[in-house]
Image 1 (cartoon, rainbow, N blue to C red):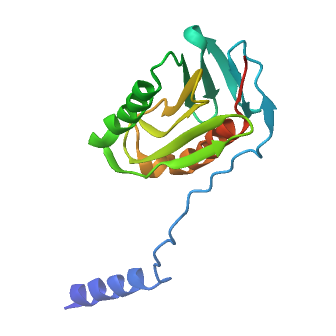
Image 2 (cartoon, one colour; image 1 turned 180 degrees about the vertical axis):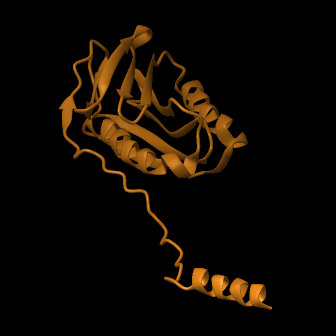
Length: 184
């Protein structure tokens, strides 16, 4: 009986103390630098503004890779001259977007862009889900130039984790379209 009393006393002494409370949910706090843009200095048939923290790499065929080193991402810009094949280029661009449908949860309706003053017309698609590319756009002057941009991350896609970075870079891609100018 004495052992039983000691056991109950020990349990009561050990269990007495502060009440254990669950920890509150933590929220990811990502901070991105303020956006400051610079005019791209490309020896290409086009130019546009890029974010100052990016690095642009010239590639063959008038292509460019705009790298975001801190975000481990890039916007790959491909250029094709229009030689009576605008329809084919538009179909190919849309086909490249919908190749991601296998992994995508949704592909948004294209956001159309038109600036008659600079002769830039295009569309921007957002691909929701764990696809390889989350944002793609194309732009053209409808007669000589066709440009396509695709966002890629240097990691296996996990859409929930990269969503803030996708939104940050998507704004830059829209800015690229808005500042796009063709050279003759």
